Image (cartoon, rainbow, N blue to C red; front, side, top):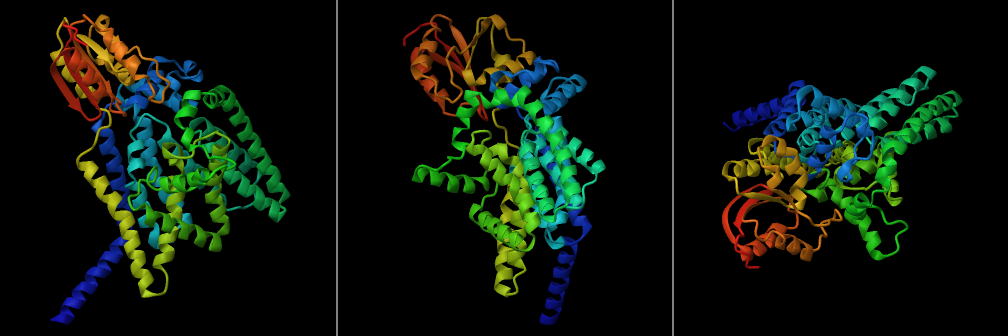
Length: 511
């Protein structure tokens, strides 16, 4: 009986291994990734603050207007903005249209990542690497956000595939023009592409210098001329404005590398930002395990695949160096384009641990890999069943539109203005009765509370007012409500994820 059970278990295990190594499993992973991104996209959550700000620029400007500095301290590549504008002209002004280009980039990135990892990862570990990519919460989310970050990932993958296929072979003049054009175009679609191009270009140049391949060096110089011309044109059109935007610099201030380090806390910055990468943008729960496998992968690749190691790691170090000169923040969604690179190192580390000869190492490797995969897969499945919103102002405005009366006013919280203005086209509110918060803001959430109270005081005698809140990241609505409760009587309210509305009668001003 035991022999039969053992034989059955053995066959089941072999079938599982056979399925794991089959093309069907690869196809299943890719389809799962597409479904996750489509589900998030079709949930059609409300535009949140940053999306609304960028969307207002896209829908209210023509193509030439998008070449000028954007309003609301926004910044995005011109190629991305123009594609978005084309989408709006073709399919209309709505969230699904605005998010279509990021969705296409997110889905296409799955296929390109699969192509790329076949060059770097052992065939037995491609499935793990691909699964980590498709279930990444951040990659799924940014595939349905009106921002350029999913396109950053797509462009990064395209550039790596183009250069990896070259395999450090001799660069002909024909290849040089092709590489030059690809790189030049990528700069207009992704600001982050500059760091990828710089890293790849530097490693190729050093390789050809080492080999004393003069013809390839000359061809590479032609490539660089294309890139430099494209970058300088883009810089003086767009980037020079972003570089001097004090609001953006202030918001991302903590993500610029302190250089040179002048204190103990400056040294702590490196440890904090390194560890933070694995939670945001990587989206991995067991960050300690992720860090371990990443470091093992870096050491193993440096020892055995040195060219590949430098090719992958160079953009990371160049991005970090740029942050030292306050040219580009190192952290969060701005380094989403590094996720494919980091996943390759993590996969390489998992392979190294599992393929150790001792049985103990194999067991540890399997546990490590399972922990890395299990949690993001579980959460991605959960959110597929129950998608989550961010700042759901649409249901709030829908509720207000159904309950508002002719004598009611609407007061819009200052961080809700852009989203409110975007959706205003969908509702028949009396524009003469809309009151926008008159509170100076520095863009960092450091508005004076006394000015907020003064603004509320100015509403004396207006009668019944709907107060609309969204992007309330410091819970200021509670402070507003505490003041309003002392000013008048609350008559109605409605809350949704990250947004709310309250109706107050302040005919009798008591505050």
